[in-house]
Image (cartoon, rainbow, N blue to C red; front, side, top):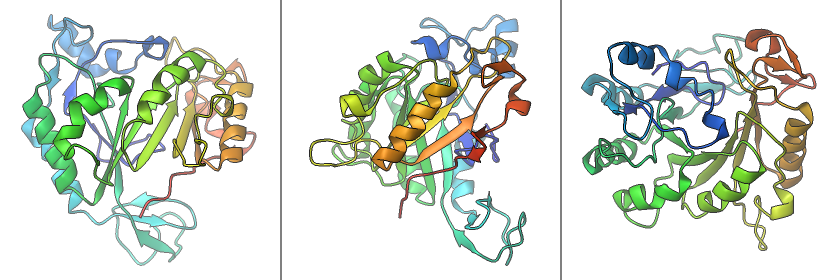
Length: 293
């Protein structure tokens, strides 16, 4: 959990609980399962990963954090893209005066899955979370799940039964064609103003246009944003450059914002380390986001 996240597509992260069960190849080298907190709990005999393991509800103080962030004025520089709660007449990075107020982007459940069904994740917990989303209108909450089939069942009624708040974005992870075909149709049935895909770690080719995942017959947009990235960590699998280039080209053709988060440990197939690999794809940093009011 962090007030200032290093993840390029969000400003902060929020975890209402910690723990999960792996469900697909994207989970194989899950960073959260070997995170410091998970390792510490494991060393004390408490497992948080697996269907029969515990789920750790985070502290009451942390659950209040969104209300604090909601009161904080947040700005974005239109020249360099810097986003910050540091208020001034000038951008603190490039000194531009071209700054505007924006909502913070909060990535929810970076150490869990917001749509997991587990006996220790109760209806009362979800009800509290829904209230936080509704109350904190100055924040955009990004719910990212590998279980989009559970979203409407678990969450829709808590938000009124037919429409979600505009500040709730819902996304799903699709690491290859198999999971694109499985999860995207489930995602598009969720009535969110912003629906997005996280193709990270990108483990295979994904073809959207051939299966009409990006637009329907009336040219209504199914998906509003695509994030792509390679895997990091000691057991990282390399990402094929052609696979991410294909995603970029398909998004450009469909008019979908494309965000390249990272190469991960491998740069064009060569293991150089995450820091050295960076975020440039063919010399360009792709930082596109969906437009919201």
